[in-house]
Length: 368
Image (cartoon, rainbow, N blue to C red; front, side, top):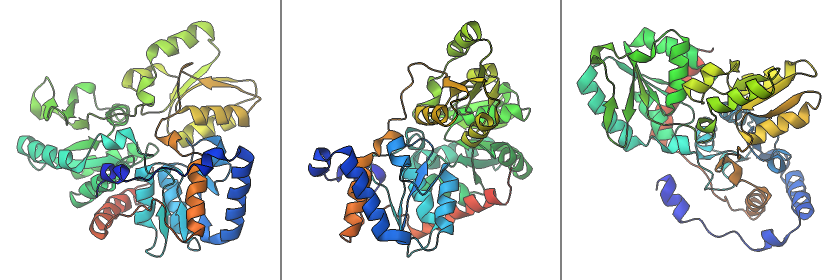
């Protein structure tokens, strides 16, 4: 059963959770956490709602959280407050005795969904016919377990936004070309920073099933999958220009999942960790416009009130899928645990896990 088929079977949330007050929900969650003790571990991604982060045992990026879950041998239940691909990675890295649970099965990732395994296998056959055995696949960790496994069995690896440059460099020591999935913007921005010109980058369109490229095919060095982050792609150069005009003292910092034009126009760009550390270490009184997910921007503004921190986009909404997990879903999952039910467990089959872990391990031996 694939992810979409699982969603179709999701039962309706019991009405009692909608009738409880926020204080009642918070008190109940704290009671359950105390009752389960070290058997329970709640990782929370940086983009989660504040009401959920309040109960997280650790916060971080997706791979970091999966590794922290792996390191926590005491935890029997890992209630992952993030999205589906993150919970998959946690399941692959943890032991068989540990159970990974996603509080809301509809918490997916539009970027990860833009590259399914059938599309990728088809593209691979077509690209090998055009370029021969000259391509190495790399996938952003924001991808399904099946795509990670595809990269593992084809000599490739995973990348994070923090180590993408190191992994692209490594890829070119292995093959003449690379296929970068599923985020074209991270792939383009990373390759360009390493000196690869845009005219040497092609785009594979999985819907049209064709390669988008105007030049001589032998000049292609990087093949970018036509996928993107629905949040980061909405930031624009016009928004940067407005800050330049109205608040010239403001520093613009964006995530490399933003478009090439936005990254080039910004003052700084980097991973979520880089953005957090940059703001943390910035001088008091400094002014920042941040191009990333709204929950994180708001949280940073609350943590560092001595700095002027705002979103690059005045109308930006939180990531809709990342924002699905709320107090109701978290409490529902925890209540079910006390009843002995694994509510929305995330499991990855052994073969996929084996191949995907190869891709992850190749990355981990080539740190940034």
